[in-house]
Length: 129
Image 1: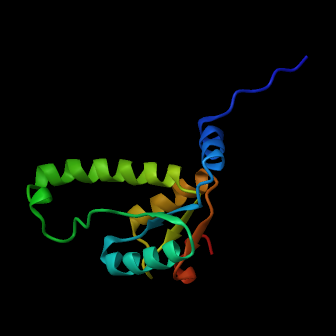
Image 2: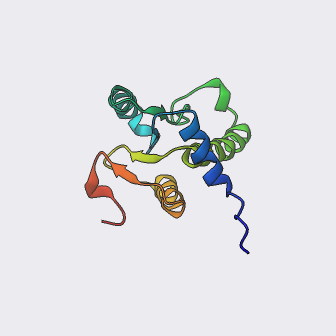
């Protein structure tokens, strides 16, 4: 006799999204130098009926929240963790911009390791193309 295997956390999340009739969730990734382009992508993805999550802080722009270098480094670590959580939550990833830096490259690899589809506004920068 075989017993049903318990659902993985990922399967539970997918099942909950289905039961709640949630639209697809897309996470926007990319260098924060493309914040304007991310906002534009957010508009288009929202118009297409998707829930959009994206970076909420541009640490390259001056702000009192990250003016202290020690606090800024700790905040960056927390924001990186938060963005990986957004990737886990999402159904797909949209990479914005015509440049892929180390952080974005790591996010792409993480998303792919989770089996998330990854799209690019500039397909020529796809590191696996």
